Image (tube, rainbow, N blue to C red):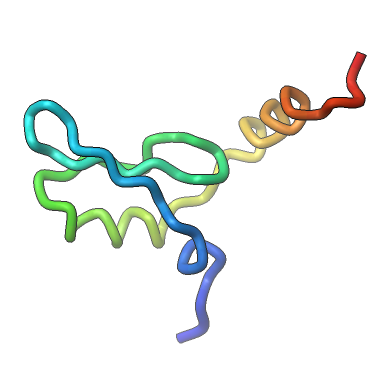
Amino acid sequence: MAATHQDLWVFIHRTDPDGSFESICPVCFETVCLQEREEDLARAEHAHACDPDGLVKLAYFWNSAQD
């Protein structure tokens, strides 16, 4: 099976106060999933696709050439 772009990204894992684990996309910064076990995050990370509308908004926000 060929590697996908998600396989090359390093998703941020955060432990919530209740002990669950949250996965955050390093590109669009959206929460990908919330699981009780950190090992269970991989499936959702692999299936994640960034919302194109959200990426356009991020590009506009980070564009230093904008007025």
